[in-house]
Image (cartoon, rainbow, N blue to C red; front, side):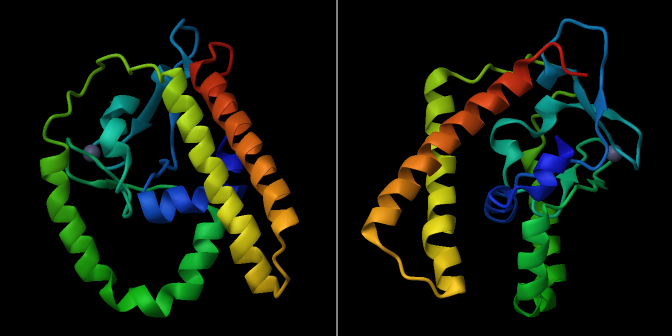
Amino acid sequence: MYLHYIINPGLAFNELVLGQRIAKVGLVEKNTDKPFIERNYVPCPHCNTLHGNQVWSGSRSFGNWFGLYCPNCKGIIPCIRNATSFIVLAISSPLWYPFKNTLKKRWYKKQEQRFINVQSFSEPTQPTTMKQLILGGLFFGVIMFLFNSFLFPVLADEEISIDKLAVSLAICLLGGLLFSLFMKWYATSKKIN
Ligand SMILES: [Zn+2]
């Protein structure tokens, strides 16, 4: 799961634009009947609170550019970095580095407000509906399509043809759907430890 997160270039978009992050250290409860997603806990390295996944679910799963905010001690929990994001960040660092501290301070100020409503222990996570799943998959497919069909050819100086675009779009949408279904299966699986 972690390896997939680090390698998949499509997730750089989730990370850099949407601010979806995964903590470096995650704990999984074993020997229970709960689905995988509800058995995941993130320990805060500053105050040692074990947070359930719902702390950073829904709208709070976005915008965590500087890491996951701990509502208990107001610390920042370190996150893994996707390989592509890392490269993008490294290349673009002259653009953002000078503003990093200001941005981080501004971001930090907003976090307390965002996390004020979090209950520390679990309201059960809402299962994803089929519609959300399909939309999410298609969205992911479109993002992959844009990357594959426009960004990479432009970088590699290749020609863009309509035929190729159509095939590529079909493959990406299908791939996105499969990915989405796979993630759903993964998140709800009771077998994975
Ligand atoms: Zn903490």
